[in-house]
Length: 250
Image 1 (tube, helix red, strand yellow):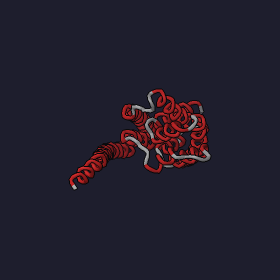
Image 2 (tube, one colour):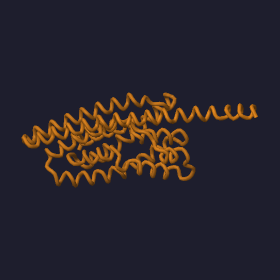
Image 3 (cartoon, helix red, strand yellow):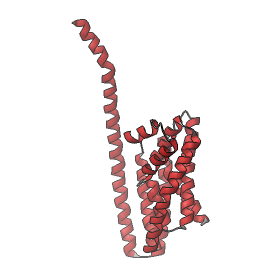
Image 4 (cartoon, one colour):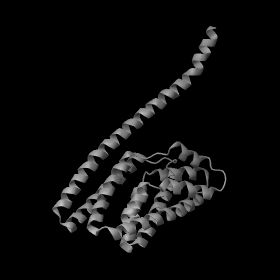
């Protein structure tokens, strides 16, 4: 159980670095008491990870351990590229974080619960629970996420509420790639099967090529969106001056 706790704490802590949940935590903490935000995160995380651990434990009983180790390694590789992509809050999430007025605790719980459904921290918890003690994974993953979000709130306050998001994303991605190599190698050694090895190498090649393309296309899209937003801002600033010149000419 201790091993499951430590591994889960480390993996989920890393998975949460630069995640949208951290951005939501910081946004909530800008307007509301930090302990209310942390309590809400704890409640939501406990619930989401309970579901994740249940799913992972069921899968672990159904699939051989060596294959689950390989699948876990491939999942960590995917999470690494997911982290490199970067994360941001969409309009709905930003509104939820900035305009909550009633039942703050319930709003934080609801926002984080919905944000974590299908997120990489939930998927990582499911992966961990397939091959580790369920209680250790549940406790470790919950504390890991709360610690990461709490750290974001504290560091954000100290650094003027701005985090070095790119540096955090790169560091977290590297750690995910290390976890991927570790788990995949462990599974391949245990399986000692030529077919499994070929399948794993093929899957790695597909994930790396697809992940590289995905990260590049996402960044290109983000760059184009930023340029479009900048042009819109400049146009909005110039519009009053142009109207004034037109009025003066008339």
